[in-house]
Amino acid sequence: MSLKFVSYMSSQSRIMSKKSIEDFLFEVRDKNKQLAITGILLLIQGKFVQYIEGPAEEIDKVYKSISKDKRHTEMILLDSGNLDDRQFKNWSMAYKEVNDKQIKEIVGEENLNLEDAFLSRKDNKNHPVLTVLYDFVKALSS
View 1: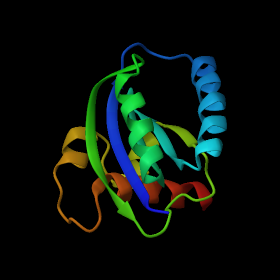
View 2 (view 1 turned 90 degrees about the vertical axis):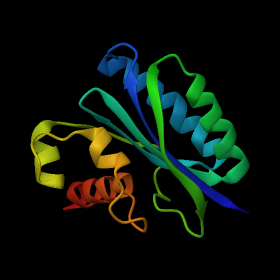
View 3 (view 1 turned 90 degrees about the horizontal axis):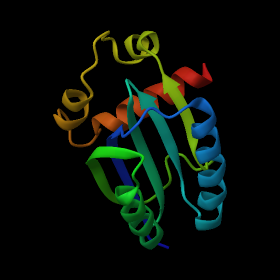
């Protein structure tokens, strides 16, 4: 089976309540389990940052569906490609709302400009979105 990943960033088209997000996550997690998709979704400064991975054909379908979803706008593809191994194999869809204090602890900057952080690559081997996601996961588990 060929594995693929996609990461993107988007703005909320309207501010979602915690209840709306919980309902959405319940639905997505169930669907992701059926499709063998794993990943993580962060809400940072009103923007969604998501990384999903799974069977290439399913990732393409899901990403196309996400890009048409009216809950977000200004969607920017951060990165995509093939994988040998899953990065978030145990999470059908981890979720965390990241506050400014956590941003500073993880990336060392208080005023994080997401576009600059994710779109200006410094090292092609370690994409900024993955660096932030991995650092966040490490912070969660410590």
